[in-house]
Image (cartoon, rainbow, N blue to C red; front, side):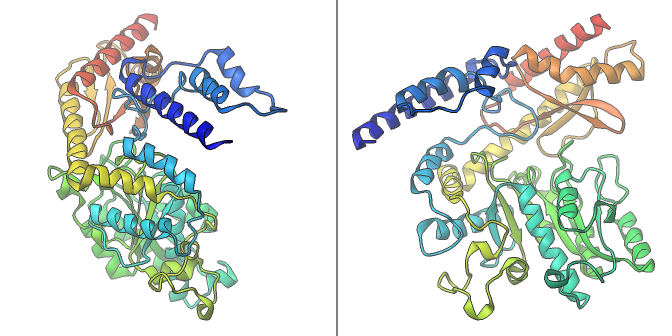
Length: 476
């Protein structure tokens, strides 16, 4: 490809992306794909010969952009998926042009990752020793990284080399979670050989927060039975309701009992930037590790998670395969990123994080997050004021769990209605919510992450919920 051809195609791509982003708010949030359009993508034959970039852009324009997930829209309230930050979109192109492996060495992406990991830690107030963190594909991978370090420390304290010997010979290592703990923690426990049965679900309050009294009793019971408690997983914003655990008493217990405190902050940890709710995160800085996702509330384009660990040397000892006498200490004595995690060839994630944070700055990010939490509280108020709706949990961060509650329906009919309601709203195209189950009750769950969302968008959401619920009730 000639340089003029690349320039022309790059400009055309930029125009295509800009036109798409500008049109998003006026388009349906999401619509099911036309079966024929779906088949064109699924059944596309392997090309025998190449096509020029203009043809490829035409395919993207006609077959890809018209069928988005919907998360760029201000009325997308589903799961925990953000709209992409414009600065991050542009930086992604530059990172792809450089295309380094960010495993280590002396080039810009490595040093930029050190900086943005530190920035991320500073944003949430987590202590950050040099080398105490790295970017990952997401919190699922960050959780594996953090729990592996916790496992290594526990085994070493028991006089066991888990990397050389595996878990054989160790008493069962027990971790403690709540009923609302994200499934990525179970996946990590299974992959690390701990076993999901050794994740003990501790009683919680009505919002699913860990009960420190019940936690203490569970630890004592396991010690008496000859098991080895080693880990507590707390949440800085549960996925279902956004509830935040009370970190201070949990951290006190972990310090007393020698347990590793891991905090799942994938979505909610950045809520600490909002002064209105910052008090909920007191004690977060006392954790041994924190996993979070810049690709959620910060809007960094997917994928980008972050693992932060208080003990940088423990993290390195968990993953490094380089003998100490051969370690490359050129980068400030820190070694390569591949010594601190699972990936060897690592993508240049740091540039889009740097661009997103640098573009908004701490103050801009805090304002965006405070906007979302304020709107979430407002949505909770609107739900409570509507006799046909019911708020199912207090609004602590930016997730609102509620349900339609028309008069005259039995509990089973209410569950059937609310189970069908999210998809019915989605298909109408004007708003997007997802569902969940809270204490056996089917619920509608709205997550607010987009700073472009307005109170008018909340009104549309509730109007769609009421209308769809009315249609479903009529058909029952």
